Length: 257
Image 1: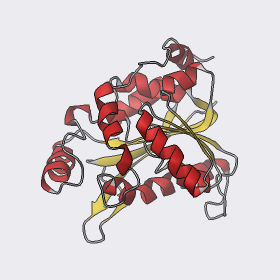
Image 2: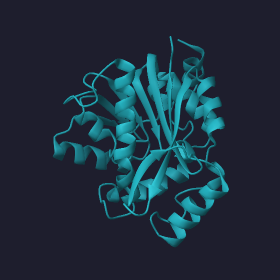
Image 3: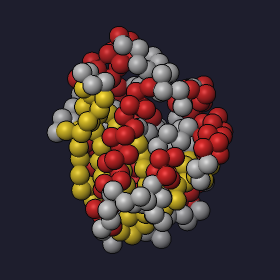
Image 4: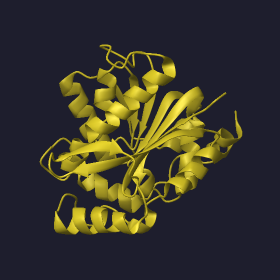
């Protein structure tokens, strides 16, 4: 067991890096996960961008064709903080063997019910990443998408997520940069002016700069291979990747051993 895994295994996974206030907030929103016109509307609009990013990076890494019917066939993926399974399900449709974990039990109940109704095989569990690592489970890819800004100890949480990555595996993260522009757009604009998100969804002080996230990933034994911004286009009411990381951004990292 590597050093990061040993450190992660010290926690029994019962509390760990979970912010109980955040869990309660998302538990209360559980029934709205699959409502594309409700509080999760922005996430549904954002989902195709992050799905394509993960698919294409994994295909490059493994020498696969991203346009094949099941380009992620057989790859194991852990979707940490999976919520209602909005990202887990399409990844499973691409052939991956997906484990979705979330400490909010209502989220897991919604995710299981939706996946079963859709006939999509995803292993949803009401667990923390600490418990998964302590149990010795490792994956070809670990996803910490829109979750690092909601945990109680970001560096320790990221190191633990890294410990769940297999040798030659990958980690993917998506989060919000801590800049004045992100405060104006993601807090004031999205929550108070436009009403895209429930007020109080985000705490600007918990937003994470790319250099901070990069240091945490490096401490977990992985190397960042790509950082890309995600920008909203009001003309198309959609999201696209670009160079601007001042508000939303995504990161890919690899364990090179």
